[in-house]
Image (cartoon, rainbow, N blue to C red; front, side, top):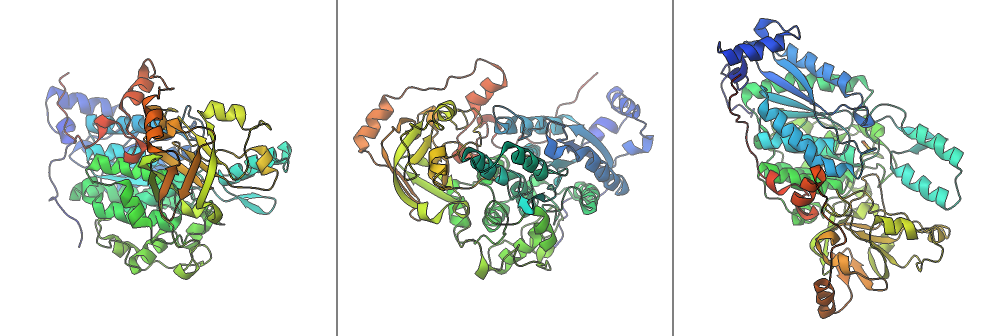
Length: 580
Ligand code: FES
């Protein structure tokens, strides 16, 4: 079955601007012609927006201008008119206070740019963590034909004969420096070795996870997720994407046709199989909210629970994205899920056909990189959603990145009121803490930080590290980088900044975590918890103005995707006419 909803030729949306002889039509065409565009390019052919998150301040996406040219080749070849435009680029490496604070801003930029401009379809140029969900969310809100193409991961990092994975190696090495095991000179050499080509993080961090989510959702061509940024086949992927979007416009194949409940279920299961980032939870919940699919945290727990992690990539495993690509990439994983009855094979993708047709023939070229199920990294690869009096609306933990001996643990809370409190205390040798304690970090949720920074995998105290201990239970309302690991409870909801129970945990309280039972419990009497909550006063004040004020006022909890309340649901593609 090939998707086809509309006849071709027909009058497209862009013709509201370009198709006619009114003063407005002449105005719209004439100014575009200053770019050297022949008249017949405005004859009713599909106008394809190339929505680009290129920015030198987002180094992971710094090569996307070049890739956009390849998209244009494909669009022209298929008979469309490509028009590239920039949007706000939320780059993970540099943005403060957190890149996550700007995901929604970027999605608004995309939504408004698409609706207000004469485009019939759009290619979403994505890469760095937030750029993928932001562009998908913006496009979903407008619901015109859309297809994502990723910039692709960096080449493997190598340092003194060892793979160094983006982020993952950084966490390890910064602990080694604190423990006195690594010199600064070695660290500088290692950081250069880690990022040696254009592209996004080379681990199965959030960028690679979200590229995989885009492919599993059906919003990118098959094979898009893993091709390295500098491989010539990445350019081919961009070229083919450009060709494909023109036909998607002709067929009127829209995000709402692709982003169905089945597609989200496929993506959740895929996340389990790849050992993907916990950030995917928030981004997919937000995306589902935009397109009108009811998706909850419990779906994440239920659907991922029996999915083994079979992709042996850092941070859960050994290899990097380059090897994932050589092994066959995501189509192999999807084929294995299909054969295990864990993929809705009939879900439609941007190809216009069912996803099963895309992956059925995919072959695995390296069974140590993509493991057979009986050699899985972990049998429970999904995201565990913990609940209890400490997280009434849920908290998440990634079992494949956690330590088995800490999955059931009772420990004394050592509390940090916010990230500054943590930084002030953590290196203090007098801090009363040992490896059996549970580190609790407050006020790092969506409103608290603001923007829910990736600080949940807070580093361990030096005096614990010196004993050779590498993991402790950590609980916060923050997120964690997809490249990070550890027994880290994240996204605790409601967050401390709005008076969730996390806000009233005190030093010395006993906390129980039981991942198997999905339980997170603050061991104090109910009456005392109520009393503490009644006496709670907020630590975080609303910013006075600007985007920070908008963010603080409207951002929702992590348990529903941290989108703005007024952005939930789509607003369509209609726009009133101008009159110059
Ligand atoms: Fe941009 Fe990892 S920081 S992709």
